[in-house]
Length: 329
Image 1: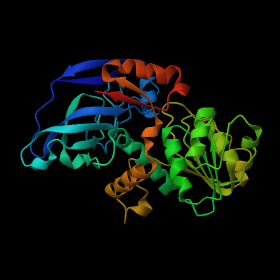
Image 2 (image 1 turned 120 degrees about the vertical axis):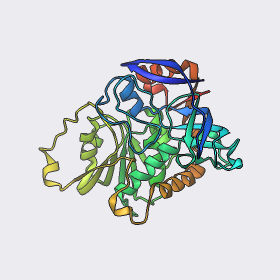
Image 3 (image 1 turned 135 degrees about the vertical axis):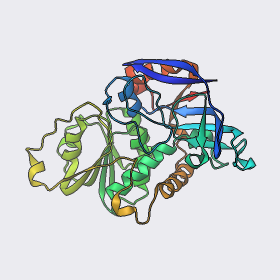
Image 4 (image 1 turned 90 degrees about the horizontal axis):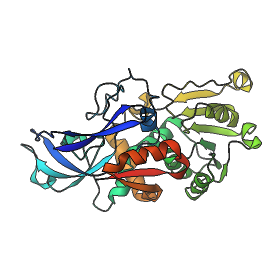
C-alpha cells in the first residue's frame, strides 16, 4: 500500500491510500525518499487556476488525464529501488533514482523512464533535475550570445538557475528583476551583475537588453520584460500563466521595436536542435550543471509528507518566505 497526494478542489489536498502494483517486466518499484514542490505549476493547480481541460503532460509516463480535480500531480521525486521486475538487472536494487513522478510514498516505473542519480550527488541536489533541465531549455531557446546584455525577470528557483547558467555564457551585463530583496541577493550570488525591484522607475524605461527572460509567473511582468528589451531584442516567455490572461501593452514602443516574443516550455526541444539534441542529452547536461551549481542551497523548508497541506498553505499565503520546499517521506 502507498500514500498518494491528491489535489481535490481549490486549496484542498488529501492523502489517499492506494494499492501499489508489483513491477512487471522492465519495471521496478521505488520507495520515495523526497520530492520537490513546484511553486509555479503546482500553485496554479492548488489554487484552481490551471485549465482543467488541459492534458497533464503527454511526455511523462507517470502523468495521465487532464488537470481537472481530483488530480495526482508532481514531477520531481527521488527514491530508492526496492523491488525488481522480470528482466531488470540485479544492480538496480538499492540504487537511487530520479523520476518525473507525482507525490506518493512509492511507485512502479519502467526503468527507461528513470534517471540514475550520480553517486556523488546528494538527493537534495538531485531533486532539482526538472528545474535545471528547464533552465537549460530556456538558455537554448533564448540563444544568448557572448557579450549580450541579458535580463531575467523573476528569481524563483527556475529564474535563479537560469541566471546561474547565463552567467556562464559571458554576458556583458546580467540584470535580474524580482520584488523580493532576498531573491535579488541570491541572484547576485548566482552571477547577476545587478538586481532591481520591478517597482524602480529605471526598470520600466531601460530598453537595454538583447535578451530578456520572463520567468516570474505573473502576466503583468510581460510589460516589464518588454520595457527592458532593446530594438530587435528577444523576450523568452517561460512562465505558464494558466487561466490568467496577460493584458500587455503592444501599442507603444513594442510596435516599432521589432521585438520577438518566444514561448518556451521544457516538454519539447526547439526544432532546430533536434537533429543533434534529444531529451537525454539535455538531461545529461542538466546533471552536469547540478554538479557545478549545487542547487540544494535553495531549499528553504522541509515538510514531512503527512504535513504536505502546511507546505502548500505556506506557498499560497506567504510565498516570500519560501524558495524551494521539499516533502520528506
